[in-house]
Length: 468
Image (cartoon, rainbow, N blue to C red; front, side, top):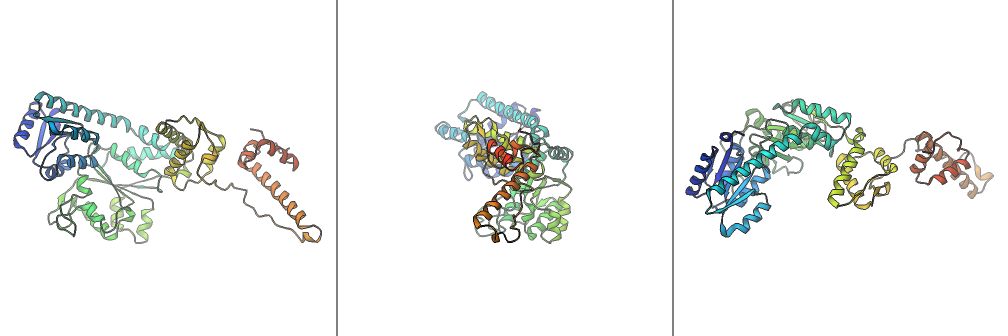
């Protein structure tokens, strides 16, 4: 990285310390900016997009610890070095556990300042390189979502639109991977070094959604004791991801449209707009065009958002991904729990493949995590917390023909009916497994010996099915 293009934000209310640090940064050929307090620094971060920060712990108003906390919420990879007195070193060590890169104790040695700054910037560069390597779409979406043709199509579409500033709608059922796709769009874009700010529109009360999006001034409403930046300001220079956009109230939709058209946001209670440079990604578990037709979404906002759409099929429509994802979740849970569960039984895999997965990948992950917890070395169907999907062809209702009680007792009628039903179940199970007796036995949860005996009893043993 060109040193002169590297920006260091110095946050200290002591002018002498700030001037000293600034002179040291200039000597290193680094561009530096200064903020006299924490509140100013938090406003500068999304606008100036520094490569690292030097922050004094003791400051009036918002102190260095609070600055660290807030910066890490929106930009977790930005290195923050704390400046502290010797007596405060234990607290600074605790702050490092909360995300600080390092600390400098006053009075500090000039060479130590340079060493820590260089180390912080080297770590920043390493993270950026690592992110670029990890996020080739094959190394991200394919690993996270699976090898199916549907995922290949999604990867192709992400690659096509990621480098643009197009607004993208990601549609798909809950748990299908919409945020994964949104993050891939961000990480492959030219905005990858800037903030990625997600907001679930369905999780915020209607009365608070506008203050979350657009921010507010002090006194804008009861409880607004201090000004607060909204998500648009937090995402300055980067990407704002609005999940479940269909839950946004119509009034808020109108204001959102105006922000997108004017590229400026007006905080609640403010009179002066703030210019923004933000790419907007949205997601919905509903077809947004259907919401437009039903009057739940503004048509003009829909067309403004819909510069490009990526649709994620539900897991039941990408069966090829199920074995891969199940194995991936098994391996991850093994590592988490320190276990060594090896594989899935054949019957277990059949159950996973035949299940409908209404909760999609999120549900599959939960089911596999629980199964690994319960299993010793092999995951079987008994470890799966799912209800088996009905087997096609086994839905039928036995009927009593004529008036059998004229010749038979109730006991004889019931026995005859049970035998008829049992023979029909076995016949249809064999049809479903294409004559595979072993598979039919597993389907009906009986052992192979019992299966073979019953087939022989009902004259079905010469059906031509295999034993495997």
